[in-house]
Length: 407
Ligand SMILES: Cc1ncc(COP(=O)(O)O)c(C=O)c1O
Image 1: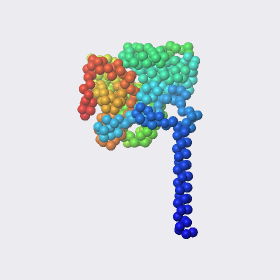
Image 2: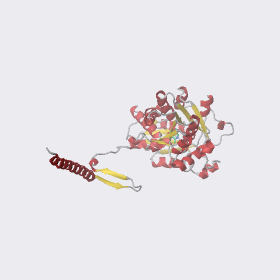
Image 3: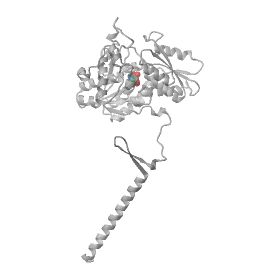
Image 4: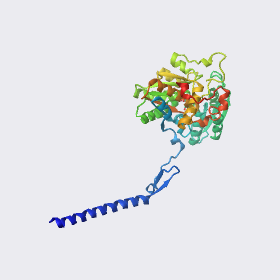
């Protein structure tokens, strides 16, 4: 074929190919547009809803499946200040607002398996608690067809009692006293469970229960390992029952042999002395120095002056490598600091964890990853830890100098 004829034919072919391709592309775009609607939210983000998904459902059938699987959050201000990654597992995002959801669910499931309780037969779950576990138990009990009876000390944040009442639990308040006293909230809960012998009832007993440990060993620990890719230099956590610290560190230690497990211990608790000197003792326990209650601190849910099965696991299995003592004023300053700098609104025990995580990061030096638990948020602490007037009466006044105080 001569060049004069070939050139126009080549151009015609290229033209046809371009036309066909553009038509196909336009058709695809038109189809996609037909199947989707695009809306713009207040911030200007485009959200596309695909009509092909119309018949597909994506919802949960019970609040029970909204327990756990919490996200992890790198705390920017503290990470930048230390050159480390300080990462918190946001347990406050679980349906009942704390990691006690996991414990409550495991305790109820085990009691069901053991035939101790049966749903929708009037079975009652009893627990002696300072709050979070009660809230999780009350919520999950209702979702699974049980009643809940909570015995707690009468000096906790008012919002916890209000919440428990709203969740349909029976709430019994007792004066704070020593565990050897028959009126300690744990002993009263045990008594109530025994008194109710006309139907199958269950004392959940988070302090002694292996289900508490198991909840964290089989869910919190593996989630943390997966979310960090196993890249953890230290895990920092306080202990109330000791379930979280024992469960998570028992899972992580064999997988990451170099990991440091660091206890975060509030003032008034004897655990720090147990780690450092092998004696369960707090200077706040000195004769004549005790101010308020068992663990003399503004912090709720953490600190311990007695041995329980879950606390014993920590020491018998040598899980803790080090401990950081945290004063109330340091916890208070930390909560105000991350609120102001990160928009992170935390409760008192989380503040203790963050103070200890910060100190741990400083000790390890830049480039390390420190993981901790964000136990609950500030909403449960509005009338005490987040009430400046209340804190002032205890001599706790924030000067807004968290990091200077800790350096
Ligand atoms: C608010 C709060 N503080 C502290 C803790 C301490 O945990 P543990 O009882 O496992 O030692 C928890 C546990 O979930 C909690 O919810």
